[in-house]
Length: 302
Image (cartoon, rainbow, N blue to C red; front, side, top):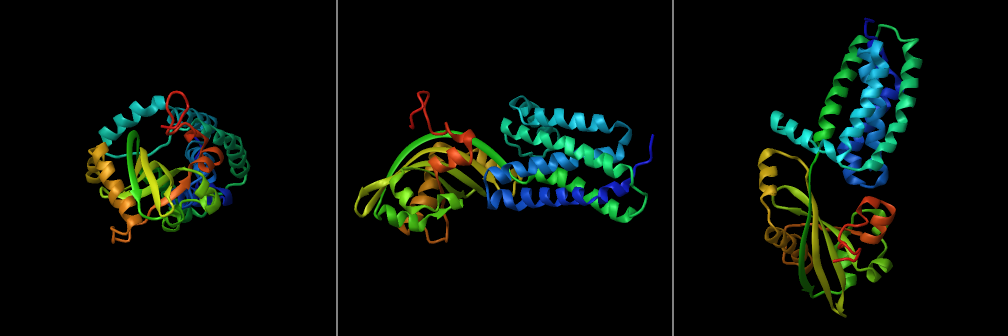
């Protein structure tokens, strides 16, 4: 067996890929959610992970790349859920992943990574050992930590609770903060009626709701909480996960009233902030996988 050439870990594009993976998973993905940041970690991870394995198993580098491809396909498919839950119970950890088969496009980066590894392998020398160990340690931490950065629970929970707030729709959108730049279009928001609302809930999570917002009178606005889509625990621990898992539809109604409706009416004085996205723009241009969210079996919005 060949002696590992640790210096391969100091290759320029491996380090860049590692930095991109860390920054995207720990900051950009949550500060600027969208199709680019949603896929970026997959591309970066698939570039550096098999490369990292090939450094230590250079005699089996093709197997490392092939195994990575197969595991990524398994990981992104719903059939892996039982395996993930088993590992979570066994290790008492909580792993975050999104089931989205469009992420498989990132597999296209594997041949590039393999070519880059082969190119560097020819000229690698056994120096920079300390730097290689440091980069290798950071890599292991990145592979483990980024998959546990957030704990997400899909809800798809029908609510259908209605409210009338005593301010105009224009004033509503002066208080709400747009989640993404594409939703910062007041003229369209005053015409459209369906929105995603993001607000913090007391168990330490951020909830996503699907709501209807439309003018009721000149100085009042009709808001209907249609469904709760999901919640994300930003800094997961067992206590927060258990607390959030016990929330019922009634609990989410109360959280919505406190952290959305009361913010709009001024009753909530705790500097709570509510973010929104225009549903049509978000679904059609950013997250096609959400195009059926909030619709019944006939394709009509509930």
